[in-house]
Length: 543
Image 1 (tube, rainbow, N blue to C red):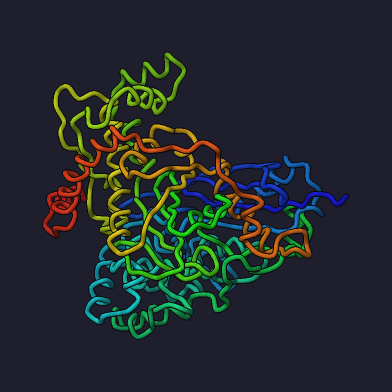
Image 2 (cartoon, one colour):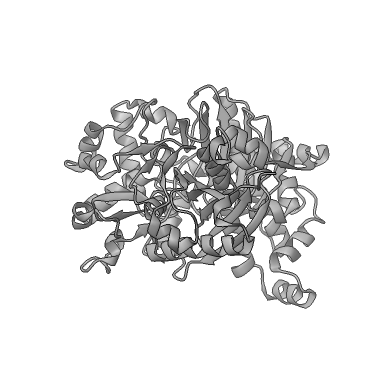
């Protein structure tokens, strides 16, 4: 009898990197490890940066530890997959050294790794959007009509304008996942997934051109020459594990390393299904939504619509919300009051657990509160990081658990708004999948989402969603001859899967939320679309 084969999946999150060793047979996790970045998120003056050394140190540490914990023989590990938040990227020299590690650049913020949540390039995003509309650029149809500040494109224009020396010194601008592949293989590549969504570059769809970039800023068109020439489609091999990296990891040299993926996108493989018009929610610090369709239709506020961008043969529709777990964490850590913290400690619960327990006892609409969920700006459908959040209906009787539940409801209404944009465009949304930490830990959250949207919610089986997704893509890249699968579809069907329980809408709560959504939508339109919105002015005053 042949021995089981395994793949490694590594997932770069916002605060940590995680790796798993997964069975190719059924996706079960044989070993895992995580590493918290020592420097975390470096935020100052609107910048959100990271130390690339944290990422590389963490990558080798977690893979080695996960393999060690698994007890799996190196000869039975057949491939590696990588994913990362996006667009999280950094400028590097021709050898792959980050500019921030080189003399003369250490004190310059534009030389460091810029995180997806870096919103300092909002002016550039607005200018690029206005220019694209003026020129009637076809690529706007596949990014919801608006370029988002979280993408690589406006951040690169920001660097070009604010620190041209960094721009000139950079041989490449590399997505975090692509750079990890480079470190493992010695091959500098660019995965077509991040390029399609974050740079609006695609071989099959309307794309950004050098002419457009030159119209934005003279000389900026050269940025296309600073992207890796070799483009690798998702699910294919980007390179082979080089000798030096293999020694450090204790793995066999020459095993395939799959093209890097986006952390949210790779999670779709963990569902074990390929269903059109079912939306996957990746619920963590932010929320990313992914939907597959054979057809292309322009959807307002879609974060990106890319052929083969999630799965081969499908258009991958991406949308999302900038702050989900971050919003709840803000309240639990800063605004719920010491009585809640003291009670939680006395009962051996986390603040989130106590607030959830109390919020579960409330009925839909009972608090009389409505929340606009823009604590981190709006990702979809308005694509405006200058917006700030708001809580309506506060009184002297308002309790912490009421605000906590209202925050979840506000996030649910934000998702409903995204779904309605899809429906208006003729793209049906027929059901929801849920993954991520919130999905695993907070059933109330998912029940409220189900009640507000009127859709059933099914949770992915594995709690290691993104890392397992990368392991699944690695199994597809490895191929059958190595003990993997012929493609990612076969790998997903074998290694992914959903939990048996199905969360369904409660008719009574749904009826209440239907009325509240009408009020919420009016506030969304009045305070979100108006360029003179009070919420924007308040954000500006904050500085």
